[in-house]
Length: 100
Image (cartoon, rainbow, N blue to C red):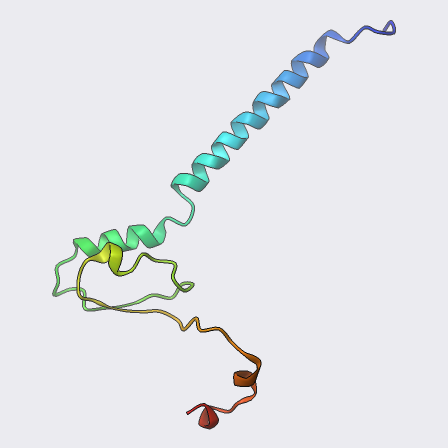
């Protein structure tokens, strides 16, 4: 190859890599916008479609505040989830009797 001349195939490879990266980023964006962590919202929509007699108490075993709760459910249902209170060093050293 003469100095100052590029190979003919290098531009095609570079263009192909750029388009591949763009397509990959679009696919990742679609996944995170439409599918990722969709379950809490789908759960509330499902519970909203059930009759009132069937749903009286719901226990959620997921991270705190991960569901839209009553703002999406729109009914008088008891919802419970793990306690997410902040932990301080003093409470870690206390026994259950001292906490009461």
